Length: 251
Image (cartoon, helix red, strand yellow):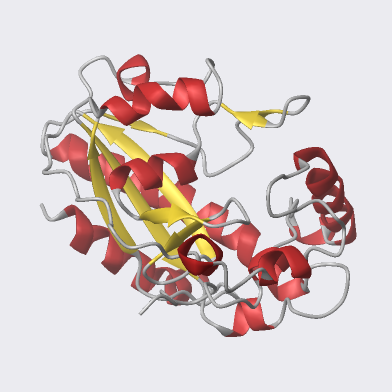
């Protein structure tokens, strides 16, 4: 079974089968060894409570990580106004459901091949006081080689940062992906861009700091606004639309 092909086909057929409003681009997939020493480092970088793959699956060998980019129309809709756009809110909700369904499907396919797996929720697995996750998809994606972090603290992949990340732990052994050598954030590359900071009109994001509690307040206000669609505790202004929104800006 080719995991990458399975993920791509699932995402490609999800919209017509589920009649979603959201459109997605082809996903990016990467693999990390469950024994990569960077996973242990996450306990220092994020929190001691951040799980190791082997703490969630005793005989874990691989962490499958993937990024599902939104079609450009979705982040383009989220440029103006203080609240996030309806399209952005719905995309968040529908993509979380897509990730949950995809992980269930991947787990079943792996089980057919006699492999075990552990499914991780797409979001809302964080401490609501500290706002720290026990399994950070974006940090796991970094370990797997999907990209690196921008000033906005989001992961920037070769296809940008406007989309959603998911991951799955398995005892199937898959060759790890090499981490990218190039810097995808223009500010970190040569300090020529601060658009994500300028986009954050709520003053939660600075060049050298991030007020996660202020950010979450804004996200909760959007959740109230769009509660009829589901739970949309998102904002996304910092990533819509900036040079790293859609692709690698560093040539």
